[in-house]
Image (tube, rainbow, N blue to C red):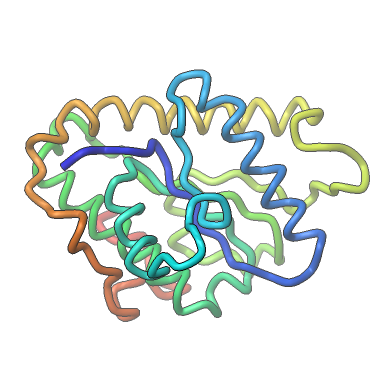
Amino acid sequence: MTIQYACFVSYRRLSDLSTKAFIKQLECAIRNHLERLREDGVFIDYNDIRCGDELEEKVAQAICVSSCMVVVYCPAYDNSLYCRRELAAMIELENMRKQVIGDQLPAKRLIFTIVYGGSDSDIPQWIKDTIYIDMRKFSLLSKKIYLDKELDKKIREMVMSIWERHKIIDAASDKFTIDCTTFKLPPLEKAPSRSQPFPGR
């Protein structure tokens, strides 16, 4: 199999303009750091799925050819069956990859999370078991993401962790036997529940 992207961005589509603006700025912040290392390193579905593409099939294939996933989490993410199946897909791939090259990925998660809504009690246990950035206090009214030095530093550190994992997975891609052209999003029951620790922890 060929690894095409360093990361797939999974997010809940919402209609409010502030959320749309946040997602766009976050994507730009990730690309600003990652694409200095790899061109076309980020997949996000509003940019990369053409009209007429079979959505679920295209998303499943994109996840399969991505080394890592960035989950942009708000409480509404849990209410999306589609988002939770995207998460389940990357968990399945993470487990498969660790079975093949686990010695090169000791204790390294392939899923990163950015939290941008809700209270402390809204954060599921599976997020607390991953590497996550808390952006709940960030406001687009005050500044842009790239102008917030503390947040930009955290995003840069996350991107470097993604890049480290991507290099390992990309170098070992010929060892993975999965056919990404036939990869499917798993059923919902494969996704972790709110109280469940991250699978494989």
